[in-house]
Image 1 (cartoon, rainbow, N blue to C red):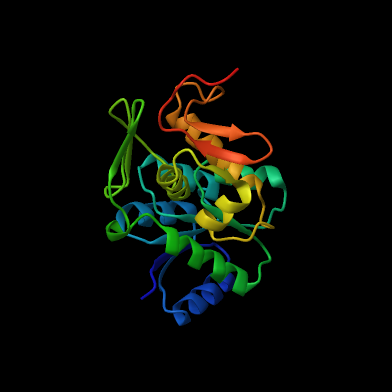
Image 2 (tube, rainbow, N blue to C red):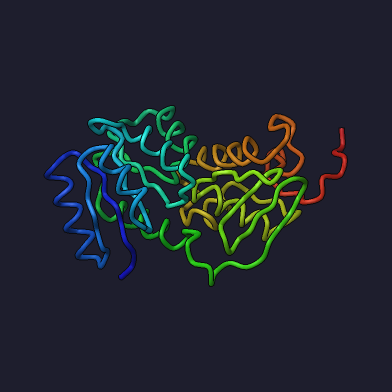
Length: 235
């Protein structure tokens, strides 16, 4: 089977239609009809991906996502939203979601997003190796664990994937387009603010002074660069 998916959606017709289509694609699907049920299932059962609606009874999708990340779960989260405003998309990414699809969506696009997330999910130890340290940060790739000053830091699955890509390419200037292609698996036409939001998330969680980063650097007009050794920066 390609993977186990938790579908949290309160609209009965969509829940049934989407669940059936995912099963036809070979996925194992469990479903929840409200936020509380979805959160309980996410905490209790192992999933490869969570498809999470924003507008849910009892607990909204943003709250569910925050609780999932607070529990230390790195399961990729794909949010479904009927809202098209950029600020709400950014909010979902900021609280730990890995991607979003706006309703109404086309099934091929949703399936492509799901496939991209599952291919890059940090849940397969055989695809990972090594322990990295920079400053007070320690990254254990096989264990998908990140600590700062020996305190565990909760990263979203996509933040972890982005961090891993930076670690594997130290000192290399990476454009937003390249990061979207290599980490997200999307074409450059995708909502490019996604990269900025996730880099900002890494800075907030791993940098001592996020507004004056020492490791995750902006290369003006080009993109970003990870510098493992925090030498003094040029003025």
